[in-house]
Image 1 (cartoon, one colour):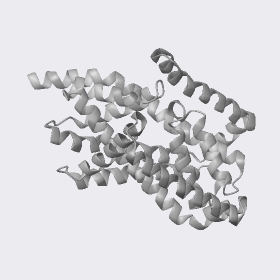
Image 2 (cartoon, helix red, strand yellow; image 1 turned 135 degrees about the horizontal axis):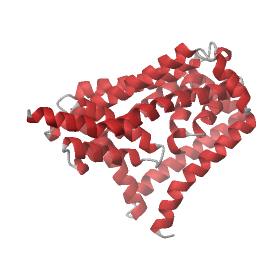
Image 3 (cartoon, rainbow, N blue to C red; image 1 turned 180 degrees about the vertical axis):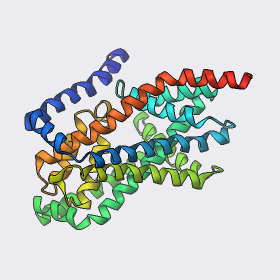
Image 4 (cartoon, helix red, strand yellow; image 1 turned 180 degrees about the horizontal axis):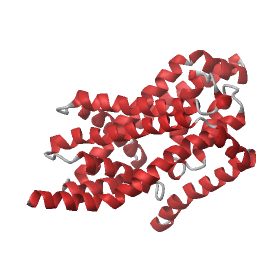
Length: 323
């Protein structure tokens, strides 16, 4: 398979998957039903959820300033903020292209070398990955009884024990093989793991490390808050269990990587998580679409404005410096 075909597949597959999931979603619930839920949704909770999302993105923009400082740069918050929103918007067109665009924007307007800017963004992603793992860990602890009951109800106890034993053996053998292997694939995995550890440890070497960590925690608290708060907008989802919120949030977060900006995949991931707790399917699907749509509209508006205002703002700033 040549490189051009690989690139084409990487671009097309998420789009095709998104189109299929949209078709599947509306084959399970009509557009008229979704519109009824949207009309009766409590707008104040949707707006508050969007505000939590806005705060998380603002905090992300501010957090990056702490990473630029050790490199000898003092970027403007406005440029960092607009670069964040522009990156989110671009990710809707080409998955993961937003990170490259963000580093390019910072290079053009803040004179941060592309490779250095991109390196700090990768480090940010490592911090975010660690936070996601922490949320998964908290969910496993809080919902341990539910998760074990769920799996034991699906599989008999002897089967569960056998699966756990097999998984332990497989992971153990995999670790030994990976450690001793010199294959290209094994080297890539080891390089990724080492980079993850190195990136995580580098955070503690930063001058403003505790502020960076505080912003990282705040960003993810706001992510969970916007998910939880928006659920209040749907009357049929009142008194939703904490476990449903956490598991729905985790599945929905991973779904964003499956399609461009989570289109189609986000609502269906929410449905999967909520059905585990026997929540009604139609309100769950409606919530997923309302949640995704409200955040997406914010990104389209602010991301579009950011792309338009970046050259204008920096031109005006340059003029002021000359005066």
